[in-house]
Image (cartoon, rainbow, N blue to C red; front, side, top):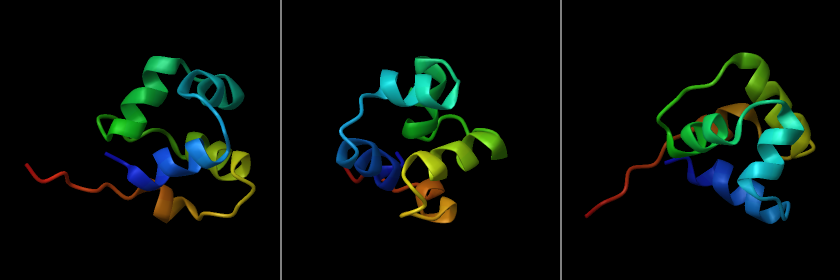
Amino acid sequence: MRQTLKQARRSAGKTQKETAKAIGISERMYQDIERGIREGKGVTWDKLEALYEYKIPQRKLREQTTQSS
């Protein structure tokens, strides 16, 4: 799970569907990126960074956190 990415989206007041549309990918693809199932292309991360007005660097958005049971 990419918690920072999820938090950035929520802080921006956007749904996964709105975020996906804004960066030009399917909602499913965005969900998989946010969950850490897919990596996403460099251009996708560039668009996400721009969408969040460069407040959070890509390396931070890309970080995955592990969930403990």
